[in-house]
Image 1 (tube, rainbow, N blue to C red):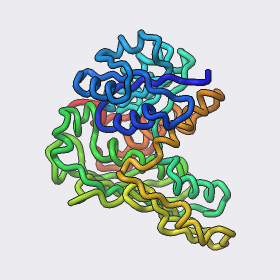
Image 2 (image 1 turned 135 degrees about the vertical axis):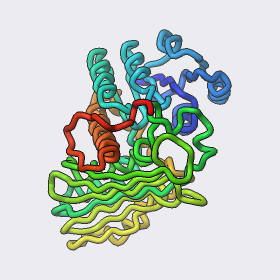
Image 3 (image 1 turned 180 degrees about the vertical axis):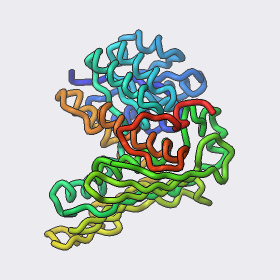
Length: 355
């Protein structure tokens, strides 16, 4: 197939970025053909902007022959229902992070896509940020040697007006807090670089907004390779987004990627320098206009390549589940006040349930 037709489900905040990429001809072989939302005002405005068909029912969109791939951008608690419906209709599935709020829902999504023989992609576009790709190349080349410590920081601003946009925001059943939503990309990056997690210990609080879940959290992680990790995440930065960063320290060197969207290499320092190291800070840093960064376009280019060549996705359903398991473990630890060991059965995490 030379061209794949995309339909967007959920026309809220993040859909603006997805629709701009798919609807503006930025990716050869990808064409936006339909948008769907239960709120007609959102759907109709987006459909008119890009000259595509507007649907107010997912079933109707899936029953049409105008869509090959469905991008699911609805609240996280709805991802499983929508992804399974799309798979059952024979559509390839792209789902925003986190892929679900409960591990059993993630398992059901994976099983549905396997049965239908369609691909399942989980959006983790920060893995394709220019500086992140460069740092991963150094990791794969063995330049860090033995890993010692990995740290991610998310210091963003999400005030009450953000949460008041939709009734589902900040709820346990549909969204979660800063760990499940805003920091989920950064938690994923930490595991992507440092490897399998053995155990976590986390604490959280709600400080400046009136929501069910947390707006601030910290956690320590132990990795299977003996390294340690730190997560610091808050939506309570004021007056504006401050930082979204990743630091990797090993016996062979240190890399720090900062900026507000993991977009700027601030430290690139190795025990054994290589040609080109002096130019890395300048050549592999970018300056995006917002915290979403530039990774979404590279992500969709990756999706198209996988569809055209029938190759494996960087983040498929199993990899997306791995990230969700880590997030769920953090919430389990928050509720118990104890270490949570991975490969566990959730008993106390509120994520994906009601208060």
